[in-house]
Image (cartoon, rainbow, N blue to C red; front, side):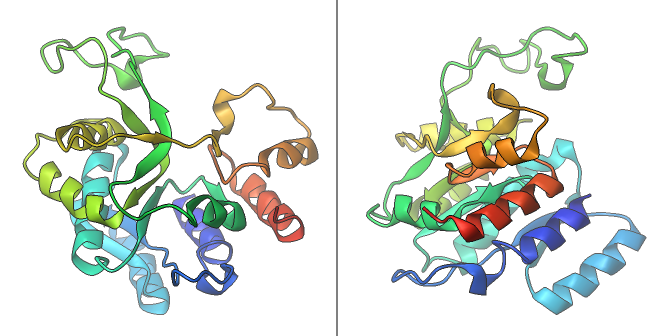
Amino acid sequence: MAYQRRQLIRRTYGRNSSWPFDKRGETKTLFVLGITDICRQVVIDDKAYRYGDIVQENFIDSYHNLTRKTVAAFKWASRFCRHVNFLMKLDDDVMLHQQRLLRMLQDQLALNFSAGEVMINTTVVRNVSRSEGKWYLPEEYYPNETYPPYLLGACYVISSDLVEAVYNTAVQTPLFPWEDVFIGICLQKLHEKLTPIRLFLRVNYVTFVVNNDTIMVSKMKHFAAVADISPYLMELMWSAFRVETF
């Protein structure tokens, strides 16, 4: 599935030529990966050579290493992308509305800016039930009852000056299981204020989820970024964005 999503992104918003002209310059889409098995690695090496869009670090590519993967992205960007205005971190189940995203950022100063869906006073899960066990943390690991404010990991934007600052803070901070909370901890150490963006949407957390794909897309296309959707819906949304860009 990860390979299919990467290919989908490459032919949609990951293609530089698909972006509208912007006076601030070009965009670049990169995929950050860990180490995988030999068969998958052969495919990864081929695509890395063909597209030049893969950053791979020395850790096992798994859900439990998402924090390491995110830190690897900040590491690469802080070394090779200091000239950019913004870094946008996206999961591979997110579709972008490029025009809306650019308009959202066009008057934004690329300085001390971190924005996304801001999570505040999120309760730490202490219940080991099947429904919540994925996010369970014992008190001895994290004694506080709530997490610090953080940007939901599905998609967020950070100005380039903060990218390096977050990375330098991250390498001095004990790793935390949830990558978005970990980045929130780093931003809290930097005394940064988080900016909420209402144009970012998680489909699994809204009430308009219906069985009719056309209705779904018609409602989702009013957002700049939509997360938690299938490759099929990503394709439908991309087609809808090509027709209606405002």
